[in-house]
Amino acid sequence: MDKYRLHYLYILLLIIFPISLSGQIKSEKSRIHINNIPEKKPEVSLTLHQPALEESRVFVTPEESFDLAGEVEGFKKGMIVHMNSIPVENMDGNFFWQNKVTMQPGSNSLNIDILQGSQVLERYHYNIYYTAPVTNLADNTLDPGKYYALIIGINSYPAMGENLENAIGDARGVYDVLVDKYTFKQEDITLLLNPEREDLYIAFDKLSKNVKENDNLLIFYAGHGLWEEDTGLGYWLPSDARRENRAAWFPNSSLVDYLKAIKSRHTLLISDACFAGSIFKTRSIFDDVSESIEELYRLPSRKAITSGTLSEVPDESVFIEYLVDRLEKNKDKYLPSESLYSRIRVAVENNSTTVPRTGVIQGVGDEGGDFVFILKKD
Image (cartoon, rainbow, N blue to C red):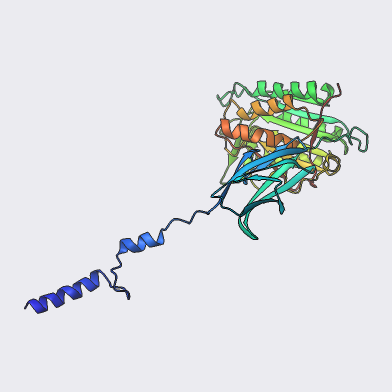
């Protein structure tokens, strides 16, 4: 009887705990453990101490050159560091440094390799954008044309009962910095405070008649905005807007129609309300950017910078705060809008819940150029 009991127990164990060819018991727990072995960490890694480069972000610098310094973690004898396929000039143990790394105007690639003999152990790639000072526009190689602006700020929403407190102040702040620091003349700026829907159409009609093909147009909006995810439609809400009736809403489609009709060389939209969907093509900062300010200015552009992707943005706008601050503190004679965006993006992300966006407004004539802010002469 004991013999049969043992045989039965043995069969039962085979069913519950299958025996491998090696004779070791393989439990479900052991298989889970094997399938979830953590990815093997690299034997060596790179830490940069100067400058603060990140592989996922573009490093923007107004300086033609910079000093590079870092160290190799997991360093072993015989390892070397290459920068763009050339050995670094100075290396002391696991520390290395390179003096006066020179950049070309525009986008630059920096590849740093850790090698053991001829074998590349790890490779790191960084993008650097050098905002080189230029003088070619000042030499009249191109006619800069006039700089027009339509600045809209709406606090009062009597029919909605949802007033804002800061939109008009934000609009005035943008107006003041454009007039004080840049080549915008007061007579070429339209400042609309608490406009109704009809006022917006009148202002855009006027621009479509006055703005010429060599001119530049900046459109700024601060006020309520709505984005309908199910319909893919976005709206600005003028002062006479009602929640339950769209008759007084200003749709993005009307804005796009006006952008087609206004024959400016460059149009830049800056909106502290949602402007998204199929009409807004986002792109990585500095993709396909020309290296020359003159080339940026020569090619037509239709671009937008917005405060974020939220359907409604906060009344107290960190986005506008940093926008005005960067415009006020800018010392570059020529400031492309994409450089302006790069200066505000990180600050806005670090100090608010919104993520600013920049991109091309589709289907209205963008050819790869950019809106260029020009400082007034002293």
